[in-house]
Length: 275
Image (cartoon, rainbow, N blue to C red; front, side, top):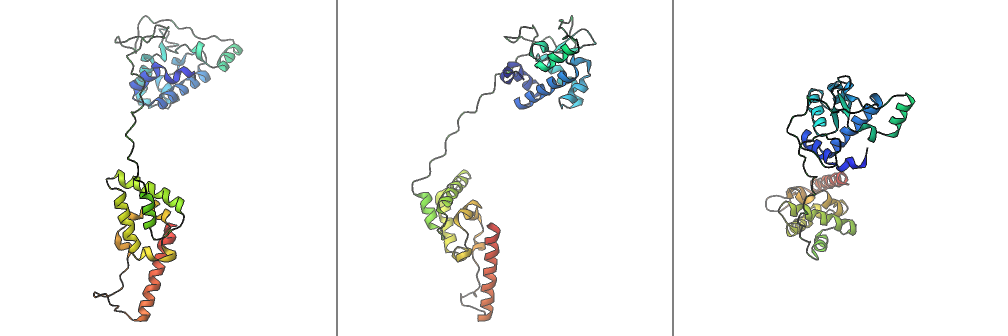
């Protein structure tokens, strides 16, 4: 593919006509040229039906006439009166790859020469020319190259000391560097959805007072807690109330031991799941 094709006005015209991205347009043209080199090295791609051409470029065959019509309108294909040729790849002899030229020389064949048709069957009369296209082939108006989106406003910087304060409020102090990075990410997440770092700090403080926050070995490492968004958990998941209504134990010591063991097992499963 010629480098100029990447940003050629005709490429943008084809994108607008077929309502496709530049990546798709460049892929379509590459497949078209590869198929031509393999099966119509003299440039006479029109020896094949529009459906075959559409299949070659992986286009919907039911829309093959539309696609070929736009390739003509945007100057990538030229119409010919000679129905044995019908369509010619524009300036194929000048732009095809060297192996195509060597193949024609080896087979003692020549490129088909473009002859302006007396009438056209595909292109309508509402056409304009593109500067730099010396073949005289008319083209429809084409859009300007897409412009990069304006820079969006940068998010407000995190207040000094906020990340450290949240880390210090978390009940387990391990893996500080990784934890600080995850806290920064968490602040961005909650800020984007309308909350702020103060909300996150309060959630950490609530967790720090909960059973899960005081489970010793089974309390999650801070980097995993923030990375997994555990600040959004239901607070009930952080606490296990095993007392009666007045806060006095209503079970025997044996039952309390069994409950504690079950509680530890539950916390271990939560910890292992998040690890």
